[in-house]
Length: 280
Image (cartoon, rainbow, N blue to C red; front, side):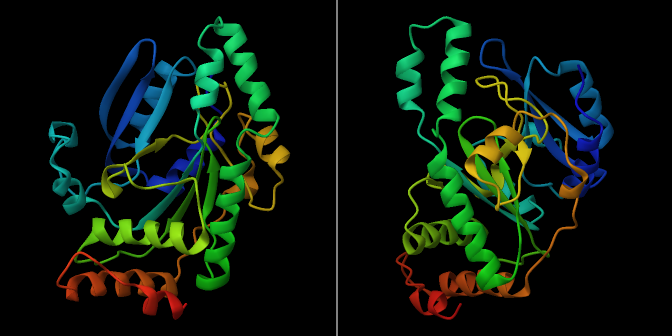
């Protein structure tokens, strides 16, 4: 079984046809391997060789360098920030899976799969779905922009927003400040940001499967109910209606630049963004 052809149309919208990214392929049992990829054709080859028995994760950002990014030391985070093509923002919502891990610890593989799927169907991910929708509607209302919401098939919802090139003086701190503001001002509990480096993130490749649930990483519309989102993730096909053009928002980009300027002009690391937030 191979991935549906329509997903490659989405990849072209998300990544372009030529780039410098890395792709992680593998699973928890056999381990993972990283590849420096330069084109959609290389993604296709790795999928054809490794799908569906493996998971696939791609770097969120393209890196504007000819270097092989696999040679970078993961501790050299400044390199990722320096070379990342800053044309997008990702917002992630993560469901705590500790309860599931405890419940399936003594089960065999089939029992584990059945328990996970039943938990998902009964509402295990309602928190991340609701909070993802809350942020989506906030951006739509205040910045007049629609993102690309995705469900990873197990425990995470993501929204990707396309921007024009963001010329930021303190890019990572500005992204972190955005996440922190959203969490505090919107009362979010599942927003994932404390343990990520904004410009070194990897995300599940749309259209591929999660090994825990065998559900697909799928795009969805925020108007979908929880049940509709979970059912949609069972499909390996991409609806053509999802292949809409990305929107950008001048208002959102100005907001990010305002945060960045505030950081630049503040002498301590204690930032007060209330005045900027109150303007939106």
